[in-house]
Image: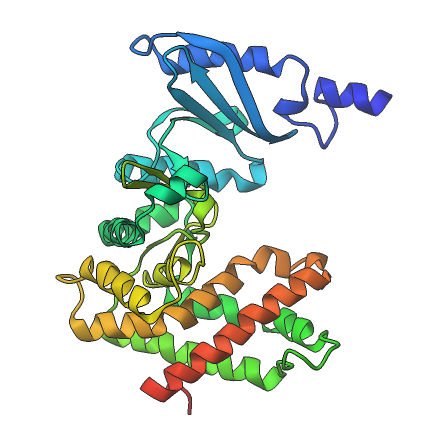
Length: 347
């Protein structure tokens, strides 16, 4: 009983602003200030809480005119998401929801509604994968000149040298995971396979440097529920895994997702054309071809590096997580073979 009372008072280690009694009234008062005098305070008493914990929340707020606002607050351990989202919205307002105000004490921000998730029924009907590829490519191309400031804002630095260093430092944890496989199928990954991947990764990073390839913004978790669609326009949300690194890693995020792309060769070529078009004038045709070739390999390496916080804890020993990591390693093995055949990446 005492723990429950302390939680409501916000005096336990696990408590947060959204476990305290009366936080909704405090939020409503803040909302009046946040929208400012230019925004009519015509709200219904309709606040829908879509998910929450003591330290995080997602609220949908419906106004009397039917329009929506959203308030998202993150656990302090994910404090970078707010800073990254606000920085990106300021730089690229056409690609992110419009941000009205920030609540720094709660690590939250208030946004205007920007459409339906792509995995909703209506959203899927309105989806145009070619248009999505054009949108993502255009955003990335614009981001090139802002990479340093975006890293300062909290984007994860996975530029080639950092990506290589991160992956190499994860070798002990990855070796432990591949050696934990009990069954013979799918094929076991050997420690020697991991070292071969590291060799190919080093050569790939060197090749990118030799060509002077630019780095750009990569979402890091681009899936249908993180893509909003309205009138054929796409807006991207949930930037907690935002990366600065080889930009063509983003193509793999979209092209390989079953809800975003057909697996047919014709469909993939159409998406490649739409995405590659955004880079003409920035990269040569040879550089675009190289970027597409390394995308699957670097994209899988990125996904593993984004798991670094979990790979450094006992969570890495969970069977389901181990299987996921081994599947990413097998993708890397397959992609490294393709790179070797085309560019002779390993000795």
